[in-house]
Image (cartoon, rainbow, N blue to C red):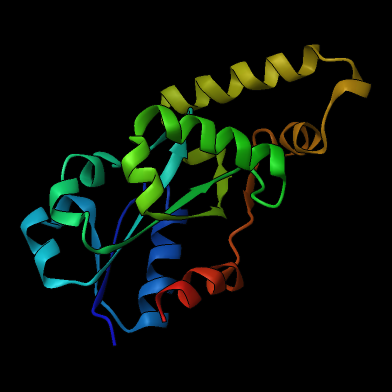
Length: 179
């Protein structure tokens, strides 16, 4: 069996939860990015990296992009975790467009990517993230009701609250790709 490791960066906990579920399912170690040394990539055949989606960016993605020479001959899996519903093709398209701005075509063609849905707890958001969500909320309120997508309506309904869409079953395709 391939020797795997899960490394993640999580600000609010959803990515950490998925990383824990994945590591348990694969019986492999899990490390927070700040506690993982790139030289240790040599110890593993499969590198699974998880990062939260924030304003179009993937937290901690530089661990992969800056160490690609150590990774390019390994199976690399990236999972993103965000509030956007990954079953909506428009959301996946937006995530992929943002990824293409931060990850080279060579890397994107060499890795397997999964998008998982997390949650949000407004009481735990940093000031910057609260401000960003407030701007998004204000922008959505200006839209005509008929122009709102189901995602927009969900964001408006959950604004200021705590919602969690994390689903342990959603890791199954990722686990299958390793086995």
